[in-house]
Amino acid sequence: MIVRNKALYYLRIIATITIVMIGFFPVFWLVNSSFKPFNLLTNGKVLVPISQMNFDGYKSALTNSSFWIYVKNSIIVGVISTFCTVLLSLAGAYSLARMKFKGRRFISSCILFIYMVPPVLLAIPIYLWMYKLGLLNTRAAVIFGHIAKSLPFAIWMMKGFFAGLPVDIEDAAKIDGCNLMQIIGKIILPLSGNGIVSVATYTIIGSWNDYIMSYMLITKSKYQTVPVGLSLMFDSAEFMDVTGVMATSIIASVPVIIFFFCLQKYLVKGVAAGSVKE
Amino acid sequence: MKKMTMEKRYSLYGVLLLLPSLTALAFFMFKPLLDSIIMSFKEINFFSGEPEKFIGFDNFRWLFKSEWFVPDLIRTFFISIVVTVVQVILAIMIALLIDFEFKGQKFWRGILVVPWAIPVFVASLMWKWLYSGTMSPFSKFLVSIGLIEPGESILGGEHALFALIISLIWHGFPFIFLVIYSGLQQVPQTLIESAVIDGANSFQVSCKITIPYIRKIIATAVVLRFVFQFNQFPFIHLLTGGGPLNRTETLAIAAMKQGVSSFQYGRASAITTTMFLVLVIAFAIYYRIAGREDLD
Image 1 (cartoon, rainbow over the protein chains, first blue to last red):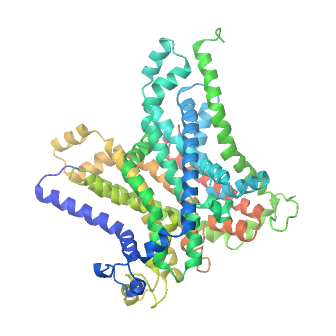
Image 2 (image 1 turned 180 degrees about the vertical axis):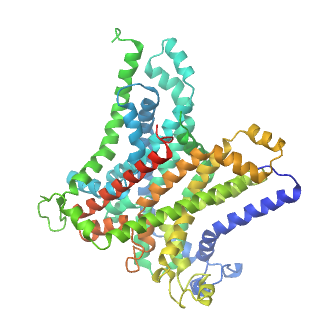
């Protein structure tokens, strides 16, 4: 939008900040409440007077050993499933975007339809499958589930990236006699840095936040991930340690939020690229 | 191998390269999908350990005859449509508003995105508290306008669905905003500038140039969001569990109820298969009407 005069300019800034703050308010309230001593929780006021700030909630969160187990599991699952998803989507998207072979159009069109598969639908057969394989209550099962959830969108995003890369470079390389491996290693990979980061960001955030796969596949606390773990903690702490639960939730959210802040540029590029059609 | 033409060789490479990831895709997506569809034709009681029985369309007959099926279906559609429309319109408005240079623009944009970054569990818990009668800073206000009794939660009353929809809009908004905003970045400045020279004001530029230019991205956002919301499970499950009295129950929640509470995996699969079919049909119709712009 074009801005014509200074008054409008500042008005626009104020409007923007106001809207953002309204949207942010629930989070602000949560963070604030986590610092409240227990007796002030129900006073219906938002701000905490600095003198009464109370770190009990955070103390109990940080000393809660099961919480750190959940964090460890979430990290392991997140890193491995992201790595696999990036590799698989790179290979799949490149073939779909560049190679000509029968059935290519069909599979391309299928990708969007695959996205329509409800995660709920996937969860039950994956559960039974893992049960038969004896993999229930393992991190491997959750990794599997996360890849299943993220792969279609990842391929879609990556394909959009490849569609945006000019083919001329690859054609020139082909004419110069490069074989496929060289093209991939020396040209595609360096150029798809953006795409890889986008897919990785999307996958790891999805994995960290995933609830349904962990919910269905893991019942033993030892292997549980953060989202379901938090709900377990909440159930057992219900009326006693509300600030503790708040503090734990905030700590659990912090990595993702930081990730987001730093990498939002790539997410934006990723979705934009995915929406571009040739 | 050397006798093949370059094109044929690359075609072979294509298949070879695609094979592992296609196998993986098949494993991760097609197999569970197929399994699910097959299971919807069987009677499976996981708890009792009885052998699976093939019962044809009985699960579907049970489903379509259940008195909760049509209300749930309508409700799921309703929630999805409202959330999608509101999020997209808000996203367009706010993206247009915020798309200009000022100090700290990136920072405020980042804050806008926070609701989506917050894990589902935290977000639903937060809204539970915000809607409660006791801890919420809004409770006094809401009691005074007669919406709830003191001490009660909105989620226990007749406005639970409305409250749920607001939370859903809040939580998912940033993603749609990012999609639209990134689309805005692709609008060529020259186009806007020439319109300004021709005398258009900001509003006209937005309506007649910017928005039409990004309509493909808007359509993508609508499709993505509708599908995602239709299939959404965790947030609703954690916020209301489908209650009170099933007033916020969606098909996804009904399916999980069958699976997790009753162990009737056959019936649960029938529900999820139906959900998938409904989406596929809905979008087949959508693409027929809107033209096949979005498909490859």
